[in-house]
Image 1 (cartoon, rainbow, N blue to C red):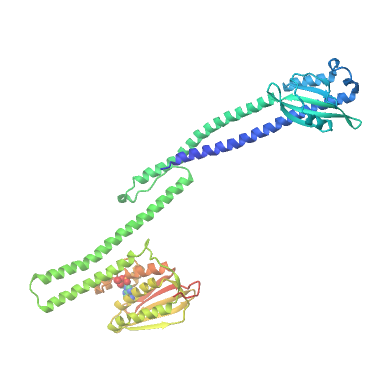
Image 2 (tube, helix red, strand yellow):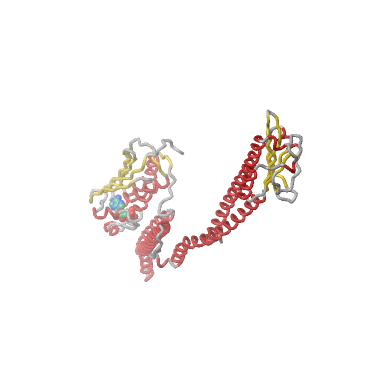
Length: 479
Ligand code: ADP
């Protein structure tokens, strides 16, 4: 497993080393150019001074080479430059034919002059070149033509040793190298300190998180770090734990409720069977016991059906796949499937429909919601009652209302109807065989569609459950 600490240290070291390398190359290249220019400018200055003197004293070059006296001015300037730079240099004057006519202080061994270079100078060009001296040191050499009356009278050659220049550059490289090593050392230590500073709170959080257990879901991370990033991380982690705790607790409550709801019919079943087996019974008594047990089995089946529907939920929500849907045929088909159940109970089922736009919905889940509402209307409406289904457009919604002429619901129960396992006292007493899961499932389905569900009810007059679904953005029907 990779370590973040090692990553921070290595990355910062590589980054700084890269920057140092670029910086050193730039400094070296800049220093090299500046010094080269300085050497060339000094050579040129020296050569031009001598050229002026030669121009001022044209007879200076006519006496024999050994006897020539260099002007006091030239000597003074050269000595100044020698002292200033500490570098060695020399001056020579040649005739256009290549004959040495004058030479100054000459500490450098004389270098052979290439014909092409001398020819360039003889033609009036200033030539600069770097050559290797006989003792192996590099020498910078300048050729300066001295014209008179439009022709080159003399060619002046000035040389300067590049030894000091090379030494200075070597010193610069050593300095940059040593500086880089020190900076890298500081970067290594600094990145270690930074990694520790960054990772310690994470390690604290990890250790705390590791000590959390399922039996201790109320525990939360506490971090004393002043940095906002770690505070956010801690808050986010604690918020996830809050949600997780709520979800686990609601699951536990749900399982408790489900087990409790199952226990009642199972206990009744067992009791009926025990009583029936206690002694020999008449056929009529056995029949009664079986009918009673059948009711309990029916209750268990509807409970299991609701639990299976909830099991299909992902993260407490039905996994709906929305598409533009024509509502009217879906409702009409469903009502024709259920008519037989209403007929059995002699309940009149009416369907009043307007032309409505397409809704955005998942047909399977919408059908499930309507079945739950119609099942309640059927269950809680007495024989001979009427159930009316109304479909109409309502602004940006399509509304479907299921109205019955049943017992109705007391006002105090209305706010709780959509809670899981909630049933009114009247429904429990009536032993309607309900589970208290039908309406919560409807609510989840409708909300997953971005819709709403509402109820109005008057005791002894009946109830109206109204479900609203949003109109589809695209008005095309998909098969
Ligand atoms: P159940 O399976 O018990 O019907 P629901 O969640 O569907 O569970 O309904 C919750 C409770 O709301 C019911 O127990 C009943 O008391 C009440 N209820 C729902 N629909 C109606 C209705 N149409 N008329 C009267 N009461 C109703």
